[in-house]
Amino acid sequence: MATKGREQLSAISDAVLSGPTSPAMVRQRPLPAPTQLMNLTGGHLESKAEIERLKKEQGKALVIRLDLCDDGPFHSSPLDPVRVANLKANLKENPQTTPAQLRPAAAGRFQILAGRHRKAALLELGREEWLVTIREASDDEAERVTFYDNLLAPQLTDYAKYLGLAQRKASRSFTVRELETESGLSKSQVARLLSFERLPAAARQLVASKPSVIGANVVELLAALAKDHGDRVVQAVELVVEGKLKASKAPAWVTAPPKEKNAERRRQPSTDLAVDGTRYVRIRRRDGLLSMAFTSAQEADELERIITELIKDRIAKLKSLS
Image 1 (cartoon, one colour):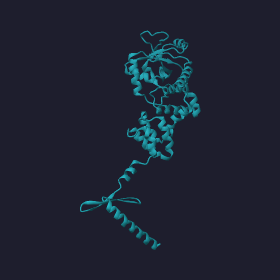
Image 2: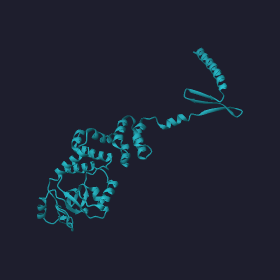
Image 3: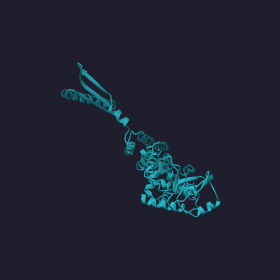
Image 4: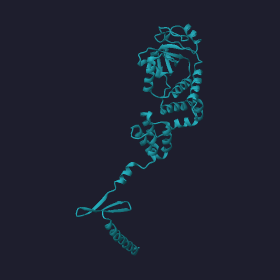
């Protein structure tokens, strides 16, 4: 999946990067070729001539100010603090080698298509600039790059992948087959990720509060049970989110008898009868079952005979009344 997905992302990126270039902020120290430097004053272009010159340099790496770059509208999940921390540790010791992908926005600003976790990491390190490529991109192209860049991130939760797929499905009215073709995922993988949408709404809200604790494999099983056991599915997800139930055990929990009822059955009341302070017999009853536990086997034999005769008499009386 990862290899095919990377090929899909590469193809999408190549398509986006074939558009005209926009300029960026000057960096004072030199950069290795083919990195290019461009000038902005207060976030605006200095000259039309420079714009036309830079349009010819398609796909080149640029250095611009971080404060000119904003999240685009197609990010379906919040920043992952673990991913930011890992990038921060790496970028603290090593230079940024992979450019972020941006597209021009209004007033000399830019929208981030891919690289917002890198931006967050660099800001935490106190950096002011970063390496980017900037190209014109339609909303459809921007959404594709944004989603498929995140889809390949190993830290991305299945729930976040679902949100991206659902957004892509809704915006393009895609079928599962079309999502499969575009994403590089198999049909079963796409269907499994989309199974989040078949959970009860309350269960989805619980998953959203802590998406790392439950994956698509379990959700697919829970979604299949939701039609007949909706309330139990919500309860199971709540227990998983609270750490009281392992996610892998959630489907079995939904279909198992409630533990409260089992406990109630185990606590059936009993009556003890004693002779001179010593228990003679313990009597228990549950529905139509009556049991007696005698402390003396001899007494049990004798009472069995007496009770049998008593039951026979009772049956005879019932017959005479019928």
